[in-house]
Length: 256
Image 1: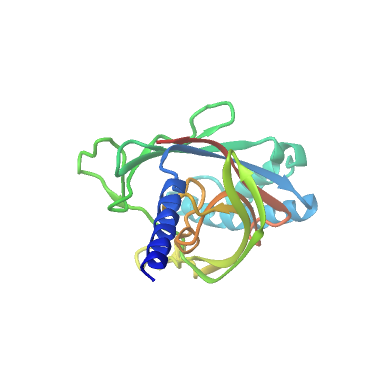
Image 2: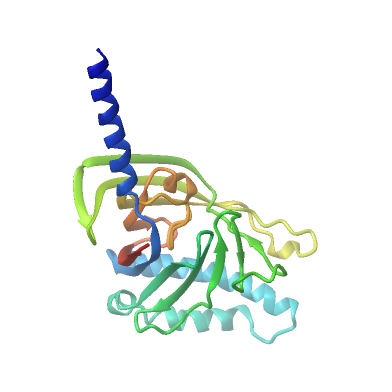
């Protein structure tokens, strides 16, 4: 009986050490964003609908500050952009999202185009506190809360029998659907800018790993998903911009 217990003990111990060794500690990770058009006509219709909402907001701003841009003039300016949309112009545009871990509690995040032209200046995230700031080390003057997306109706389907490796990391397929909540704006000082709560239906088809455990991801800010696994490839579709799929693929990973 003692020998059997000893045998079980060593099996459990080996399993624990195997799982610990499988965990990946990140030094740097980056993802590439690229859109693909599935229905150009639907994409343009969806884009024009969103443009109209934006024009309505900008016309209110123009009116408030006494600017000379009328709603029709604003609409004409944005229509000229919408009318130049083509499958090629959408699909050739790429963005790279970077995370670089500075120490055992702070990471730096920024974005570039594919040609390495900087799109955003670095922001530093203290992931133990969930606070972000503009300087490293922090000067303690300007800090703001890292905000995860607010969602409801999350459904996750894991297909662990479908497996592949991404840059040498074991992954399996998972599909998530949820409703993203855009919170209402209710400002009594500027009631003309108030908007009701809005909802976006989202579907993510992913290749995910259990070997990276963190709630912070360069392109995904859904805490409820990151508590389960870490996606290394995401195909996102939603009803806000219809007729397209946005793909996030792992570009590079540097381990500690």
